[in-house]
Length: 270
Ligand SMILES: NC(=O)c1ccc[n+]([C@@H]2O[C@H](COP(=O)([O-])OP(=O)(O)OC[C@H]3O[C@@H](n4cnc5c(N)ncnc54)[C@H](O)[C@@H]3O)[C@@H](O)[C@H]2O)c1
Image 1 (cartoon, rainbow, N blue to C red):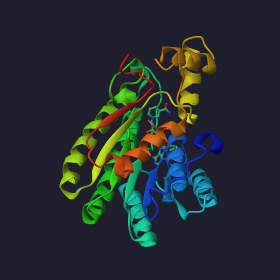
Image 2 (image 1 turned 180 degrees about the horizontal axis):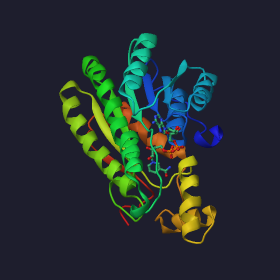
Image 3 (image 1 turned 90 degrees about the vertical axis):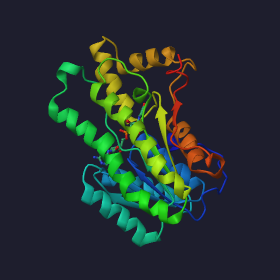
C-alpha cells in the first residue's frame, strides 16, 4: 500500500529544513502527502486518530532518511489538536506547512443520515480543519510565510445524491480556506484547498462497496463506472493528490492563495 501511495523517482529537496504537519496521515491521501514531503526532505509530523497507522507512515518517512514523528490526535478535540501542534513545536521549534486531510464519508442517502452522523461528519471534516488551521495559522503569521492546504473534495464544488453531510462539510471547508487565506495574506503565508476526485484509498473502497450494493453492483463494478464517468477515464492514485499538495507548499505557488483546485480528472468541469 505504501508503494502505491508514493511516486517513484522524486529526487528534489524543495522542503529541506521545513516541518510539515499532516492530519489524516494514516489514510490514503494524507499518507501519500506525508511520504511525498519526506521524499522532498521535509521533517514530517503524522497526526491521526489511528495511532498505529500514523506510526507506520512516520516509520516509512524515516526510512526515506528524514526525521518523522507520529502523534495520536482526534481533530474533533481542540485539546488534542492544540497538544499535538505544541508537541511538534516542542520537537522541532517550527511549523512551515499544514496539510489537513483527516476526513470521513458515509455515502448514506439523506433520509438515513442521523443527526449524530451529520454532526460527526461536520465535526471531523470541517471543525477538525478549523481547529488545525486555527492552531497553525499564528505560527505561520509569526514565521511570515508557509502554507496551509486543506483537503476538500469535488463534492465541495458540486453534489450528487447520498452526500448531504459530506458535501456540506466540503463546501464549508472551501469557505474556511478562503477566509484563512485572507487572514494569512498580509503575512506572506498562503491557504488553498485541493478538491480530489475519486482517489483509490480505503475511503473510496469502503464507500464503493456500500453504494455499489445499493445499485446492484460490486464495489469494483461501481468504481469502474466512476472511472468511465471521468473525462480522463480513470480514478486517481493518492500520490497524484500529494504532488499537487506539494506544489501548493512550494516556491512555485507563492502567488496563489484562497484557491480550491479541482484535481479530479475533469469530473467537475464535465
Ligand atoms: N479518496 C477520495 O476519493 C477522496 C475524494 C475527495 C476528497 N477526499 C478527502 O481526502 C481526505 C483523505 O481521505 P482518504 O481518501 O485518504 O481517506 P482515508 O479513509 O484513507 O483517510 C482518512 C484518514 O482520516 C483519519 N481520521 C478520521 N477521523 C479522524 C479524526 N477524528 N481525527 C483524526 N483523524 C481522523 C482516518 O483515521 C484516516 O486515516 C478526506 O478529507 C476526504 O474527504 C477523498
